[in-house]
Image 1 (cartoon, rainbow, N blue to C red):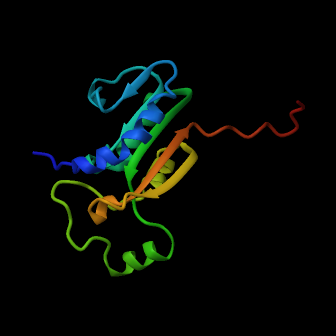
Image 2: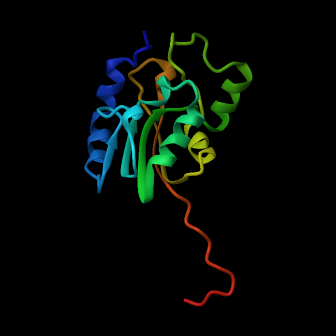
Image 3: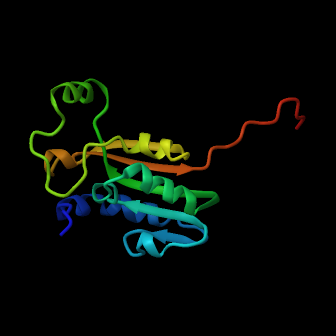
Amino acid sequence: MAGRVPPEVSAALADRAASLRGRATGRVLDLDTDPLEDADGAYDTIYAFLQAPHRRDLDRFYRRLHELLAPGGLVYVLEPTIRTGNLGRALGIGGRMARPITRLHLDRDVPQSIRRAGLFVSDLHRFEIASVAAPFRPFVEAWAQFPTPAPEAGAVS
C-alpha cells in the first residue's frame, strides 16, 4: 500500500489548485484523475499536484511529463519540496528529516528535478503550510515549459 499525504495538506492547497486548474487550455492531463500510465499523445496543459511524494524516481517522472507536453504547453505543479537558504543548508548538514514518513518520498528539490528533465521553470512560488506536519510545510508552486530557443546569430527581426 502506498503512503498517504495527510488530508489537511490537500485541504490547504485546494484554493491554489482550483486557481491553477482555471488556466487550462487545449488538451489537459490532470494526474489527479488521469493515470500517467494511460497518457498518450501531446498535452497543452499538465497538472501534477501532490505527485512527487509518490514517485520514487522523480527525474524520470518529470522527463515523462516533458515527453507528453506539447510545444507551447505548460506543466503546473504543487509539491512539497526542500527548504532553501540558510535553514535548508542547516537541515542538509544535520540530516533533513528526523522521522521519515513511510512510503512517501519527501525532501527533494522539485524545481531542480523539473530543470533536469529539460523544462524551463517560468514561475516559481515557494510557500509554507504552517498547520501540517514538518515534512509537508515547505511547498512549491511552479509552472514549467519548453525552453525558448535563443535567436539565431545574425538574424534580423
